[in-house]
Structure formats: structure tokens, C-alpha cells
Image 1 (tube, rainbow, N blue to C red):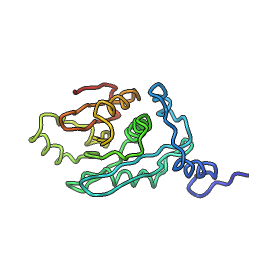
Image 2: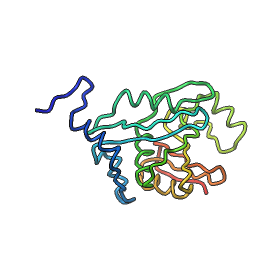
Image 3: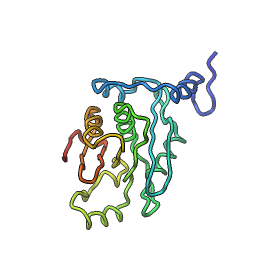
Image 4: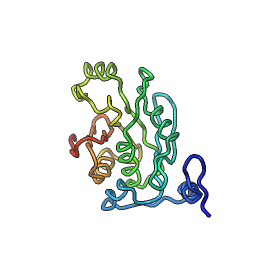
Length: 189
């Protein structure tokens, strides 16, 4: 008999989450779309913030269900560190980030440069850079700027593009990749 706890997580799902810390599959680029459609039992995200010193490494999805407490932690982690404001991060963006990370076959966490941005922060950044959009998806919790020390901007961007699920911007001079859940498109060099 398979009992379900009050959190809605089955025993099998919990065992799968524990197994995920021991075994990591390395899917090919051709299977990226399947990752976004829910193939597999778990989804995991690993990041750290150089600005706050915080780290996150957690399973946020098990057997077709997002884990509410994990999403709350991700929302807080991806907050605007300048204002300490946060919003609900779109799960589609988290899924793209996780799928691209899996395709890169690394254990290293992403370095999060920017997740949610308040309108005030976005306006301030626009005065300093031409590359900041007036209606940035960062202000809606639908974008992230990420870096991996062990992979080039081109490699990270290629993995994100393989997901065919949103926008991917390559910022080679600044050494980061933008990922969002907006229209499928890519830019930068």
C-alpha cells in the first residue's frame, strides 16, 4: 500500500528524490524538450549568489508536482538583492534553468547574477547599460542571468537553446547567459 503524507509526496517520490543525490543522468541535447515536458521523476536546481553568499540545492518537482516549500525558497533566493523584494518566479524559467544544467553534465551550481528585479532596480540598471530592457522579464520573475565557471557562455547558451522553451541571450563580454520563459528566441555573441 502506498501512503501519501500531508504534503502529497508519495514514498516512491521521496525515494526518487534521495536517489537523485547519488545518481545523475546526463541527457543529450536531443532529449532537452522531454525534460521540460516532465519526463523523469524529479527536477533539481543548484545555484549560489555571489552577492548574498547564499546557496540553494534542492529538488523542487517530484512525479509531476511542484513542491510549494521549495518554490518559496527559490523565490526568496532569486529576490532582488538590492531592494530585498521578491516575487513568484515562473516555474517555466526554473524548468529551463534545470534542464539546461542537466544537459551540461556538471555538478557545479549556477552563479545567479540576476533573478527578480524590482522596477526601481531595473530603471537604475537601464541608466548604466544599453542591454537592460525597459519591460524586462526579470521584473515579472520570468528571467535569470546565470554563469558557470566550468563552462563557456557558448556552451551554457547552447544547452538553454536546445530546450526550445524561451529566450536565451549570450553576453560573452560579461560572462553570463540570460534565460527566460518568454518567446523562443536567441541573441548576443
